[in-house]
Image 1 (cartoon, rainbow, N blue to C red):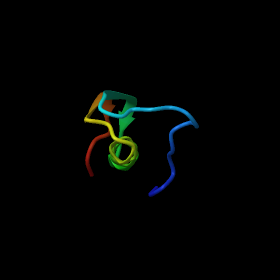
Image 2 (image 1 turned 30 degrees about the horizontal axis):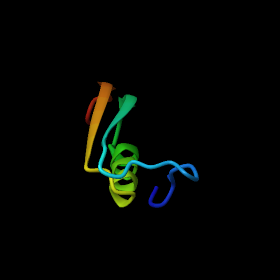
Image 3 (image 1 turned 90 degrees about the horizontal axis):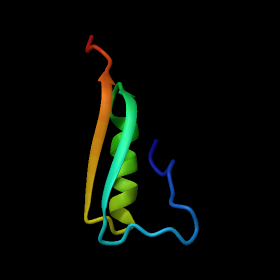
Length: 57
């Protein structure tokens, strides 16, 4: 999953609080990588909002 996401050319999250919204979280890998991408591009803070979580095994 590492490196799977990038910001569109010309987009900026520098010094912003970014809200990531996902319908279901399973392992958390997608949200972790998205948050890391936002931080690499200068986001001040990243918050995740998730509707549901799959049960742990």
